[in-house]
Every structure is written in structure tokens, then in C-alpha cells.
Amino acid sequence: MSLQVTIRRGDRSYDLSLEPGDYFIGRARTSDVRIPLAVVSSRHLRLQYSESGWTLTDLQSTNGTMIDGAPLSPHEPRAIANTVSATIGEIEIMFAPDTTPTETSMTLTESGVLARQLISDDAADEDFAMVRVKAGPQKGKKFNVETSTFSVGSGAHALINIDGPESVLSIHQDGESFVLLVDIDPERVSVDGEPLAQPRFALGANAKISYEDIQLEFTDPLAEMLKDKEAAAPGVTTDAPTPAQVLEAAAEIADMKKAALESEAAKPTAEGPHWIFLLLAFGLVVAALAGLWYVLTL
Image (cartoon, rainbow, N blue to C red; front, side, top):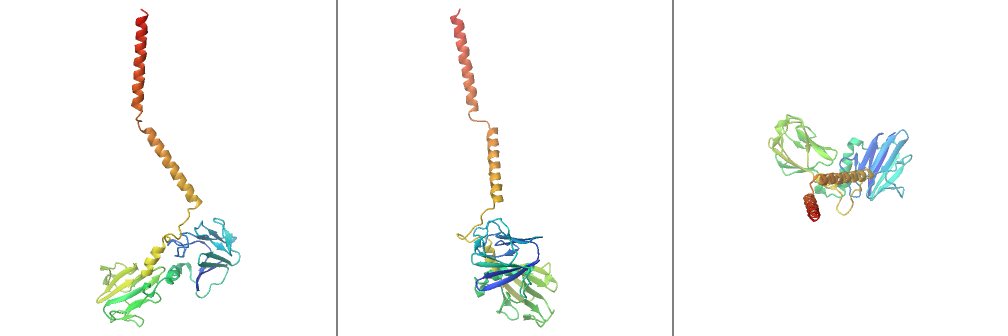
């Protein structure tokens, strides 16, 4: 039984269709469904499917989760029998089981796009991924690649049209980031001055791409914004430790104390020699008294 998830922020909403499984929702890049906002904990919610249906669990999040207006108790799974509305700060998430996906519903493999879309409201136009032509045909022109594929070649759909192969290279969005795909010998294309060894190359926030007399500059400020969102905003929120983490930390502290005591016990104490001298002195005094008693009794 699939689960339809609708995430709303302000007047924008995004649909996601999930097949039965186990999913984490949170701010961290490793989350299955990433919501890169400070109000959301690194691992905020867990969605699980079993024979009895879907459940939703708050993972001891810092800012908590409201379900239909009431707080969701941490680590207590809540059954999703019907449509459930969850609120995390400014974010509203609707969970609807056994619902037919909409035409705009994303699959889990496409959900990386969601993270970029959720923070796009905080971005200016110049923050979106761009390709600037530094040399070659259409020098000086800029292309927004956030919503369209950038390509170089002789084909009808190439944004930079050249004489030669129908398709030389293209830049595609791949989840939260972008990739460069090369349709010719990859060594003929360079990134940051190095010829490519493979036809697929993951682009970071900045890259300089060269092919013959064409020089392109790729920039993706949103990639830096997403990286910054990995950590909680200062003074806004931090993740509370789970009970298991607390127990683990307590065990580590106990082990450290035990090791320290054992180490201290193994060391020769500074008072050791002092007690030896006291015993020797006591023996001498006893011997002297015994000798004096012997003399007096003669």
C-alpha cells in the first residue's frame, strides 16, 4: 500500500509517492526525504510499513511534531490509518495511505529535487544553477540550468550549437546536485583543467568546463546553501540525544573512569617510600628499647 506524502511550505506544495518500506525524514543529507530547514532535526521522523499498515514516529526531535494539533510523543509510533496532518514549525506534511499518486508526484529517487525546491524560496535569482559561456559561441551569455537541460552539440535542441557531433555534452540535475554527461571521448572534455576519464562527472558548486574553443563556467550557489543547512542554524535548534545515545555516552564515561582508576592503582604512590622509612624507624626504636631493657636487667 503506497503512501502519498504532501509537503507544504507557505503557498507551495510538493507531492511524493512512497512504496512500502522504512524511511527517515529530516534535515540531514542522509535522510530518505530531506527537508533542509533549521526547524527540522537531522532525523526528525520515521515512516515504517508493516502488515498492520503505516506508522509515523517522532525520533526525539528538538522542536517536536504536532499531529492534528496535538503533540506526537517521541518514540511512540502513530498509526496512519487515514489521512494525517503533521506540523513541524512552518512545514505541514500530509500523509495519505492507499492514495493514487498525482501526475506531479515524485518518486523516492526524485526526492532530491525536493530539497532544492524547499529552499528556493529563500534564494535570489542569481542563486540558481547557471552556466556562463566564457569563450566560444554565444560568449557572455548565461543559461539557467535549474529548470532545463544545458547541452552543446549540432543537434536541434542544443543550447550552444556547433559544427560537429550532434551531442557533445550536457548538464542534468541529479537529485540535489548536477552531473555532466559527455557523449564523445571524455578525454576531449576537461573540468578544472583535467581531462575526464569517465563520461559522467558529478559537478560541485563550481566547475570550469572546456571543449576545444568553448569554455564554460558552472556555478551552483544552492549547493552551498544545502551544505550550510546540514548543520542547525546557530541559536535556532540542535538535535536532542536519543535515550540510546544517552546510555551509550554514560557507558563510555563509566569505562573512562574505570580505566583511570586502574591506571592510578598501577602507579607507585608517592607515599610508598614514606611508609617504608616509618617502618624502619619503628624497628630501630623497638631494638633500642629492647637493648636498654637488657642493660637495665643486668
